Amino acid sequence: MIRTSIRRISNKAIPYEPVPKNKYNQVRSQFNFKPDPTPGLVHNPPAAIVNPSMQIPKMFLPANDPRRNLETKRGFSKEIIDLMPIVDEAKFVPRAPYTQETAEQIRELRDSDPDNWTLHKLARRFKLNISSIGTIIGKQRTSVRNPVKEMSARSFEKARREKLWHTNQY
Image (cartoon, rainbow, N blue to C red):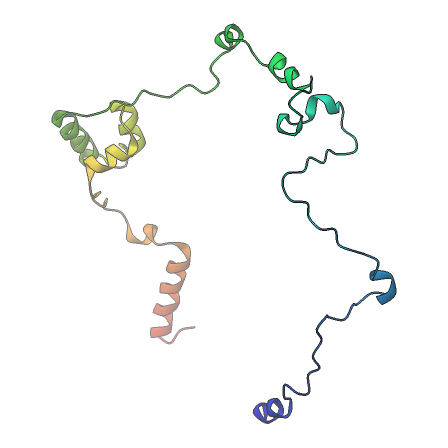
């Protein structure tokens, strides 16, 4: 049934429109010319700018403009930068290479209690990157846990429904 109705409509029945019909007033919308984009960068500041001389980017100013020097006057001197506090200090300084004894110690700690000695704790204690700790440990051994707790809620619900389905209980 659907196949026959599709066959009745052919490509010849659909009119060809080189320019799509306008949904709005044809006469008025002909005057809405779309502007051609200007090539290159254009600086167009907003209408309510506080102080245009301070906020015009340097690349848009001519070479002999006196406003180019304002940018250098606003900058910080080396003495002021040295007095400023460090915003984000490193948590630890990562050591480069590690010894064989350190690698064995990391493996022993991880094997003794994998829930307590996470990668982050081991990295903090031995001052190594987490990626290097991961390469030392290699494949992590799976801790023995209750398999029901490890299942996600969705897979647990699916297994429960499947079990009820096999026993003809819905």
